[in-house]
Each structure stands twice: as C-alpha cells, then as structure tokens.
Image (cartoon, rainbow, N blue to C red):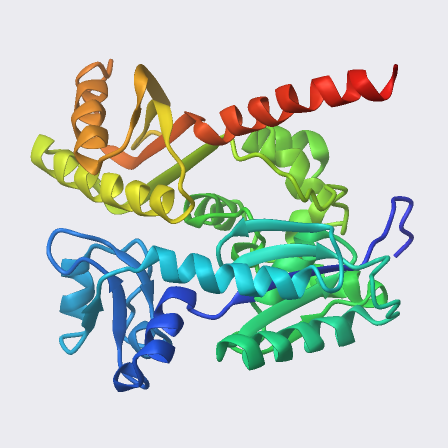
Length: 365
C-alpha cells in the first residue's frame, strides 16, 4: 500500500472493564463474580465485569434487563472520585513517554509516540511497557492497539481484549482492512451496519468496491469517512487539549416504539445514562437536544437552552418530554437520543485564553 499521507506511530490504550475492574480490585470479595456498576432500581449499567458480559450484560443496558439476563448479578454503586484518581495515575504513565496524549474518557486515550521521551523505535514495545506499568501501579489490566493512525489503533485495541495488544503493521493494513467485518469499523453502529448488510457490504473489501459518490449518496458526510478509512486513510492528529463540545447518548431499539409510555421510559433511561457520563468527567451543559429517528429513517432534532446548567437526570427527563411533545410526526420510533452542549468545558477554554492575553502582551513589550 502506497501511503501519500503522513504516517505516525499511534497507540490506543483502553482499560479492561474499567469501573468494574476497579471495584473488583478494591474489594477482593467481588473478584471472579458477575458485577455491574450502576443503580439496581430504574438505573442503567455503567460498566459490567467480564464475568457479567458472558451473560450478555452490557454498559448502557437497563439494570432490570441486566438482572434478568444474569440473576446472580451484583450491583455496585459507582465511585467516580476513585475512578478519576486511578485515571490520573494511568495518565501519569502515558506522559512518561509522550505529551501527545488525547484522552477520550477516563479509561482510554490515544498516544502519538512517533517521537517519544524514551527514544524508543518500537511502538509495540512502548505499548507493552505502558500496560505493564499500569498493572504494577494500579493492579488493573489494559489492552492496546498500535498502528499508523488513530482509526487503525482504535480498531486494533479491541482485537485481543482483555489484557492484550495488536499491532497493524503498514505492510498488512490493506489485507487487514479488506477482511475486517464492517461492524468492526470504528464509527459503524448497529443501524449503519444493518444498512450496509442490506447493500451486500459485509467486509472491508465490499466497502472498497463502492465509489466515493456512491457512499456519500448512501451515508451522507460519513460516506467520505468510510471511503477513506477502508483505504487506511485517517489524518486526524492526536490532540492533547481537545475540548469536548457535546456529550450524547442514543439507543436504537430492536422493536419500534409506538406508545407514549414506552418513550417516557426510554427517556428516563437515557437521562440516567447521560447523567452518568457527564458526572464522571465533571461536565455540565445548558442546551439539551432530543434526537428522534423514525421507522422510515427520517430524522428530527429539537433543542432547548436554559440560562443555568442542567445538573440532574430529572431535568433531562422533564426537558426531553417537552421536546418530545413538540415533534411534528406521530410515527413509529426506531431511535431516541439525548445530547448536551454549551458545556462548561468550552467556558474553561475561554477563561484560559483570556488569562493568556496579558502575558502575551507583556512578552512583546
């Protein structure tokens, strides 16, 4: 494969069942047991141990469903301050090797080690060292993916989970991507995967046969992304100071929703999940957006902005229901989503920029 774009050495590190693993580490009585971090009653699963995953328990699943799938499931309330503390320890290890670290959440990050503080040539060895140090410092395991760009590193980190790593060498990228099932492509969700299946696109090689125009017509702006990544092209750099602009949760339902009560229940569940994600990163926002995708794939979104920050699940539910009442159609619903924007992370960025101005002026005198 001839790469006419910059190639880098990128590592994606992803902790294994992070919240659940922290709980099992801190409480040895939970080791080897099926546990779920989250509320048992009217809540959602924030994380599931690998023992629970064997029963089909997954994060973002309603707790009631999780309990039905695994009757012996042990629910553990989340301890976000503890998870943040462990996350800080892990990030300190990352910075021993490079300052080009882009955290995606408390438990995963991209690292650009093309140039690194240790002067090591092998990104594979760096990933091994990092995983070993994480285990020695925290008692937790991590998985890693290594390749020439963020997309490939992210896909690779999932291949030998848990407690493993995978390198996709430049010479093997073309073959790897051609044989990769489309549902394994990062950014392809269940709905998109099903649409691809219906079009006879099952693997990367099927996707590669489609023209850019064809993919753009079928998948909108995402079409160009699919066209590029299946050819190993992903030029996004590791951004150490990435400012998060929105936090979103959404769910596609196995059966379309028809009843108002069903929608209300789903909005409550989504609100809990959204609150959980916001809490773990100390994020607040002022604009709530409801996303509705109907059975015929038509999409509708509506937003509401308030002066004060949203801070409780009840506020998301109340506003979500108001936005639902403003919908223009009464059609079966296949997807619901809630997202929060106008975040306090943007304000922090503005404050830091304002603080820099006097010093810059002083330096130029």
